[in-house]
Image (cartoon, rainbow, N blue to C red; front, side):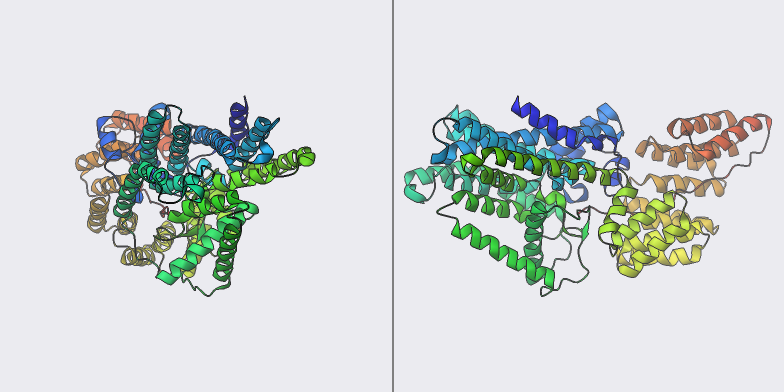
Length: 619
């Protein structure tokens, strides 16, 4: 019943995520605008097992998302439900691993009566410290981070199977099961590549199969090394594949990487202890000065952790093992290979968190028995506070507006958040506010291409196309492969009546990204205005193949048909648009006019270009 209770409490703490939608922080690129993951057919599976979409090779994660699409379409509820269930399963796995480790620890105070009860209590506390901590919210509440919760599930199942093999319970079967599960973890997210190092640490303590009395090169030790070889080979392969997938951009200098890595490790340590001021984005400063105060504090914290781990190695080896494991598991996310605009991220604690959670539970177990009741009450209070913070933090991921609003609340100097909020305001038709956010984004980060693109969107909406064109051209100068800016540049030219120029940019956009449905719609619109309605239809068809739920494509296709006096066919597309978006005012008005014009010879309907929003890229 205890694992079921742990899972239930975890689900309860994260329950608000089921009301959350997709956010404009890579959910759009991964789901809304991505036709390739939709289902589990041969074409989708081929894409999942060959793509490095957005710098990741995660075929098993894509397969679970393809299953979600099969069951739920693009309803965010299903994606969040799967993440939530995986998060609950991970809490149970932490419980099971903690039990194994406490049993292997050999603490003399746990011998005799009450030993199993104390182990159960410690494992329960460890599982809930892991699961209910608000640092877990980003991995569970963000649909894009399916790879976090899925890979952690496989990785911890691998560790548990390995521990079972060590205890000689169907050893061979469990051992190879552990290897297979580790391979699945790597195919879900490559940052689980540290599992072999974790297994080596566990073999030092609490398993005591390496070092100590057994030595480092005894026959028993060599057997351990042979056990770890398959894990190490898989890990090395995943590391190499990750470098290929990421195509890492220009990197920081070695000294700057050391500074960022020290800061990140210190950040994760302190946020674990005091999880206040959490944000979906901690933006990397435009210039990393290794002598800055925050980095100096990072060095000091790392030195402190090293000293504590060293001094504890004999009298409290559990502390040493936990701290070393925490640092090792965090290593791939510390900035050794910088990828993305963040200096740190809450989700980067997900895989390493069990080490500190088990250490925290150990502290409760080490209290003298007369204080056992007090320690349990203290743990309950701490867990209650964490659960409350987690419930609140899930609200941050409810919508793009709540997400970017929270980032700006924590860091008003975030250019990415300013641009993200501008996008929100444009979609709300609050264009003047959107322009103000875009202008702040450009002022904060003049080299931020998405900021210039966003400002161009606002200027276009205010009929200031010549100014918008300059912003789009600036965005493309900074980011030549920026398909969204190419599409928006075409829209700006179209607003000036320069259809040939507009078509050239739509064509360029689709050369950069053949999945850009907005460019297909806009190209079709330009052809209609050039009196080539028949040539426009294939573009609307392709747009709907890419985005079946595109009301805009149906509306504009209907307009093109109406201009050819095909009113009945046009009305069908307007109805299809309203089925997708019942509040679509254009579709409603055009359907009424098309109905009235059934006997007329000249409809008077106009196309509507789809202005693509500024895009945000995931780390």
